[in-house]
Amino acid sequence: MSDKRKVVVGVTGLNNHDNPGPGIPTIRGIRESDRFDVRIVGLAYENLEPGIYMRDLVDKAYLIPYPSSGSDAFINRIMEIHQKEGFDVIIPNLDAELYIFITHKEFLRQQGISVFVPELDVFEERHKANLYEFGQKYGFLVPKTKAITDVKDLAFLPEGFSYPIWIKGKYYEAYPAYDYHQAVHYFNKIAAKWGLPIIIQEYVKGTEVNAVALGDGKGNMVACVPMRKQYITDKGKAWAGIAIKDDNLVKLAEDFFRKTRWAGGIELEVIKTKDEKYYIIEINPRLPAWVYLAVGAGQNIPEALLRLALGEEVEPMRDFKVGTMFIRYSYDLIGHISDFEKINIYGEL
View (cartoon, rainbow, N blue to C red):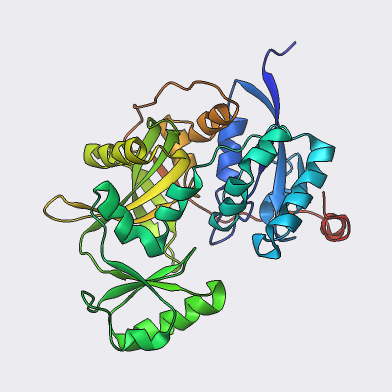
């Protein structure tokens, strides 16, 4: 008889295409845990998210409304599914849904559902539009950053900005613009997809390095694996990467958790200059899509996140295998139209 703890875990972010979500790699890490007997309930926004049909990873999948539908519709749907499944934990993996989970954290706890997410104030502080002020408050180097809502602002850049600059969406996508015409093109492209405001950011020369890290909400860092991208798609996503030794980046992550008391996972995107300065260019407020690299390198961060959500004490992990690589690949998942019909008609599979 198994002595593993039985848990039901809801996981979002099941999109696993050329702009993949963190859901599937998070599930893979949890599945590899020898502590839990896990039932994975996938929470999907679109009927063609590949995770819906990955039967070896996802036990059952449900469609949920986009956060833009409103918090009431979103939470009501979560409660409908909870009545059937009995969630112990939900792990949100997409930026746009985090606000609802944070603001309804106490309500969900009262219903028996744990979500391990940061406090609202620090979540709002690290938004792209607020990142420069965040850096000043907590003592981090951050390139000048400003939110704009009118494409005309690109013709006369605010004081302190000059081309090249970064053009960024409020949630996703970023492009370097080397002149006004490029900037206008990217402004319109991102605004059409993600809406306003658009973020402009000072271009800092250097090497981009990243880190996936996990905080316990008490000021302590539980895990951290630095990575350098080896291959980048046209959407700026890492399609291959390697775990690197970078003690300064690890210390930066430690400082972040100590100063903010962040609860949950983050991805730090950093530019390392020739004179060894580290500029934070983004703080993504959840595990990244490449989190499985950390699992492969020896730090099962998804499992540690689940343990924290369940109220367990987790010893900090510091060792990992430098040189561990990940390489993404395309894979044809075969199913049947009847499954597609079921998720469309019933909203579950």
